[in-house]
Length: 373
Image (cartoon, rainbow, N blue to C red; front, side):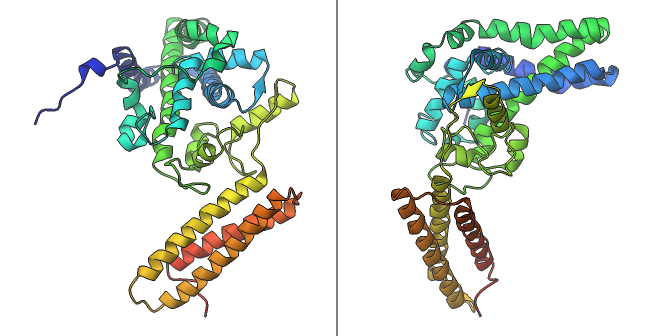
């Protein structure tokens, strides 16, 4: 049986560009580093461009423009639009249109990077093949009113080439060793950096819909991954993001690694961002309780259907106790929210701690341990 390649659907511009970026990043850049010492100038520029372009995608394209999770003054908008273009992930207008459709139709056919079509499709396949007919960009009318967004939409390729590739080459030429420095600026600061930032973004669409935890909701495939948060400036907490997409935070817990959240908060203290949208702690905790209760109910059903085991009756007794406690806490918190009771942080902390202990006990029961005497 022959494999039929739908050539009419291939986006040749994207395909050729990504092939060239990948080959240059994985072959030419290592060869350059084998022969030349990149030096502090090129590595400093590489670090700056990684942070500037990566954060422009997460802070600008994603949380500011796609989800409107805060407002920003024009310097922040301009910076994220210029360096967002340098990530070579299309204009902010196109990026946001795709991303809003992803949230609206997640895990279904109209989701541009639908994980149910496979890991590779979600990771990069959706970029290499066009959707026919092309979906209308009718979900970004608000962004069309923004003059800076529309300026970048018209000139993003020019900005990307000049600021993202040419400028590092020029700096490399004058400050890092002439022609060799220029080549290093192009390959290391330009090409290899683009490859790293793009792959980090792509893994959010693929890996964060495949591997990780779902502590807030199982309505879709999105998962939380601490490891991915390290490479994506905090975007790895994807389960939370899909449940509460308009929150300016992805890592909602105080210990979560979310540099984008910290940057937005810091900019607000400098008067450059405002109206930071936050989901109330009570609502977040309710989602955690509901998910914990769902998992407990699921485990209870599987235990009831299980055959005879020495620990089965004790496990059922323990599981019923956990579910009753969770239900009681859930309804008490839900009533407090309905009555607009101002709950103390200490009360929320205790409920949260009890929910975590319930999940831990649930895992122990699953392994046949920590059962009542």
